[in-house]
Length: 268
Image (cartoon, rainbow, N blue to C red):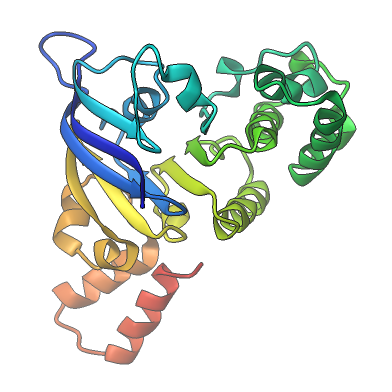
């Protein structure tokens, strides 16, 4: 079952430049999708269109069978949570506790349930001891954790992570990615927007955008094995893939070494 259907979607910030140009895409319920692309490829624009923060110039978006319109946008936002790259763009609470509660308040959660979920999800992102802190007392990475906790607490069917771990250190990023993997295993539909191919190897499928158009859509293993597409994407390749391609270019036929490099590139 497709939980998101995008048909002939186009959007421009100015008349002479298409941020997205005739994009067609389907995302299945419970799927983990990684959307990759260089800066300016249209990744974040696509996310904002899906949640109704931008209005398409052309095309339709269906979420769980509902056509996105001005009349249905609030209903659709009950189904989708989004975590942005810059947490200052969505930090609205006076304290960490208030910020995590904000989305649940908008969805009319019972107070007792809100209190339980604030405690639960602040612990999951290692921010429980900061609940009474104000935004200016937090680092960028801590604000990012709070934003993630707030979206997770809303318990939406679909979660979009738009470069949501970019401010975290490697250990923190790994911890959050492990939890995202668990959410997906529990049935959540995950859309991960990233330029980090290492994060993308966890997903079921990879979508590559380039200059507002779909460059490639396919199973993760298939896309990572498509040297021509990856080279044309302007993405930073994983080191094992770079070495693998260099061996091919040098016509070195050590299949055992190549297999090891391939497995390293898919190390989840």
